[in-house]
Amino acid sequence: MMRILLFLATNLAIVLVASITLSVLGVGNIHDGQGGMNLQALLIFCAVIGFAGSFVSLFMSKWMAKRGTGTRVITQPQTRQEQWLVDTVAELARDAGIGMPEVGIFPSRASNAFATGWNRNASLVAVSEGMLQRFSPNEIRAVMAHEIGHVANGDMVTLTLIQGVVNTFVMFFARIIGNIVDRVVFRNEEGGPGIGYFIATIFAELVLGILASIIVMWFSRQREFRADAAAAQLTGSGNMIAALERLRAEQGIPVEMPGEMTAFGINGNLKNGLAGLLMTHPPLEQRIAALRAGNYR
Image (cartoon, rainbow, N blue to C red; front, side, top):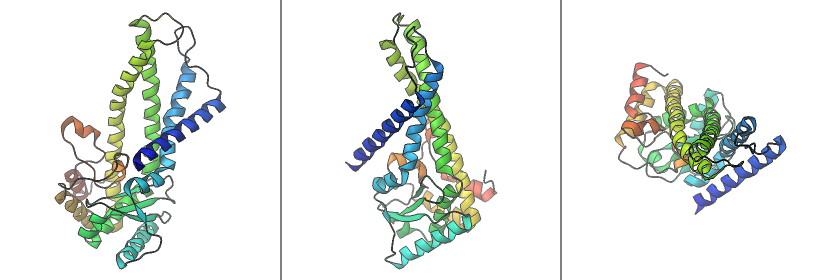
């Protein structure tokens, strides 16, 4: 129920921001009434919708992550382990040159952790209960360094910008394709768009969206290598390799993370073949090999 409410709230915020922005920009109808399209208005329309969704999600990311994963933020450490975790994150954040993140623990038997937030000085890093129970202190420290690396590298903002650009061009070209199909295939001679436009646009968005996701997921995989490199620099490559080896040994345990948070965790679902192009994380074997070879990409 909570995830449904989060989804509705996010989309309502996106529609509100987009509507206000389009009104301020004075963007009118993207169709010229003669079978053609106003490409400038179309591009502005697509950019506003495309970037609005990405930035609203970014600004709401901490709020959504806490509720989507059930993360409990440690405001006042209650145990030695919590105190150690807060002190460890504080030390890593200081060494990485970022502001102190919020530190949280989320209920999951799987070993995982994530970082999110719109600002490198106002982020959130969290670790699962399962990881705290089974990983050694050095391994947990390396995992936290990996997440701090994501924050220090500005991965959340960069991924948002890439997603916004991709969304814009998917919507832009899908509507151009829809208009061509409507005029050429369905031979719509009326001034406004016909049923062919809407059918073709939806189909084109699906196809282009899959192709665009390959680009976004490629970047997501590359940033994992960079975050691993950051962790190696902060805690030593041996500790990061040990943490990844432990993750590999636990691959049979399901990753209990909401879909929208998978890309921000250290442990992602692995796929083979063509489906591997849509993975948020590279195979653990590749990440371990890169660290051992000193090839941090």
